[in-house]
Image (cartoon, rainbow, N blue to C red):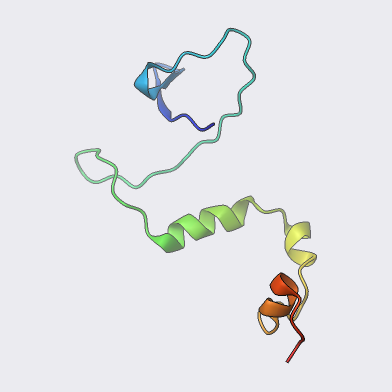
Length: 83
């Protein structure tokens, strides 16, 4: 499950009054958002979203991808013959 919230006075406060059982293990991921002058969040571009995902993948995982992946994507996804 993903819950969203904000840090207020150094404490993470979840939106919608979410109450988790005492002792629940959690993982906190800081999400950077673009904001306009009023402090309201603005929509992020798809390029920004993709870049964030790409940055979370370790370099050694990228190195494991076949060198010809973009040329033969259907082969690697669906098992079709390489053209």
